[in-house]
Image (cartoon, rainbow, N blue to C red; front, side, top):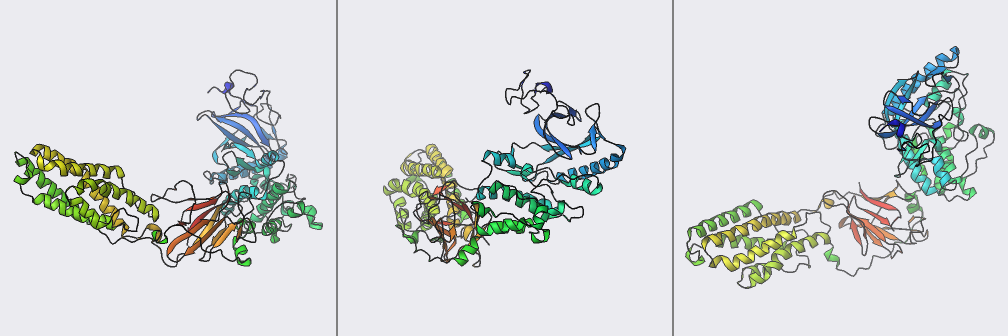
Length: 635
């Protein structure tokens, strides 16, 4: 795409129009003479657009990758206090000879910041650095362009503040990113709503690390380090203040405070003499007591009084499920009433067994002998050739039919093993019963797996249907047709009979083994992990007495505040005979939905609970369509 056809504000093709029809931007040059002119090309590859933002130590531009045709963001090292733009409007130079050393030192630190960012190229919570280049007497960090808006703009679009739950969802992602950044020995030093980006797809990223600014402040006492009032802890105001993860924790706490109250905390130096920070609850903010205590601790003026790691801060911020269960005993509700047979839900181990290789060999030999005998017979009459192959085949099938129906006897099978054998080998009855016995077995087997939540592979019902058709045709026509026609019918039987027997052997034998979800040790403990909702990241153990999740504090162990959730919404419990967690919807208004993990490891779709359901490790359930979501965990 030709650079002159792009809008420098949104990088959409505007053609030759003076005003961009997409965003209304009029190209009138840089808004500030310190900024690079739009349409400047860096490194022969990057087209510079409008400035996205300018701070005390750098300018960030919208850019376009001319080689890969995509939007980018490019950050330029430009400390305003000690640098200027030369007459060519490109080159960065010191404002005086005395500033040269500071400018060069800061450039070195800017390069180090770029290298540090490159370690997080694929991190979901940090804006990815794509390239680094030197040009115009300075350096540039090329970053991905994130579609969305910063948290400052996001809050403005939501009337200046958001709920505790909404803020927690966003800042938990920031905490995850900061934890990895701190583990790499890096402190951000500039966490604020300006540097937290909320993506259109729901993701959250942090950007604009303050390492260069901090290093320059340490290098030159003549430089005034610009801090964001209300977000910077007191140690950042002091030249000898020790900084570390606790520095970012203060800034993150201040960001959280701003998000839920709509107010920026008082500046930290002002709080040294008299701390007048108001708790959010005193301003009418709905926040769990333990979360408010954690938030206020993160905003402690002295670093030693704050959390020292992000993990400690996150754990304390999350509402405590376990504490509620331990300190507010609830009489467990009575066992659920069921209008179905409990015995049908208990796993039924199969004593049936089919030796696959032996059976396939026996059937193949009998079919081969049949083809030879029929091919050698001129009239093809069954009475004129040895009956041994037919006897072998029927004897094998007798065993197969008996074992396959024996494997799924739980009171719901449409026939018994004895009846299946009798009906298939008694003349006349065999034609009538071939379909319910052969095709019917595949259907009953698949239903058996569903009733008992077994992970076995489902049988192909179409294959069994055509096998039944070929079986009937064989019984009717083979004894009375010529050798060549009989041979074709035998081959037709073989095409369906062999794969049917092979899949039946695998299916029957798999029922003799415990399902994957049951291959556990007696000491395995199951718990519920909150995937989303106000308790996101928390886990709660579930015992045989069970817990109730709902909105009514007097009737539920785990209390959720959403209006979508009923007072007593769902009950969860374990029993000693089944590995996993039972869940039962307690006649909630908006229902409870579950999603189970299939044998291939994929997740099936959401299904509304109409009766009690046993969930294994990895399965999930949620309260209402958009309520809290929990996953069954095993330890």
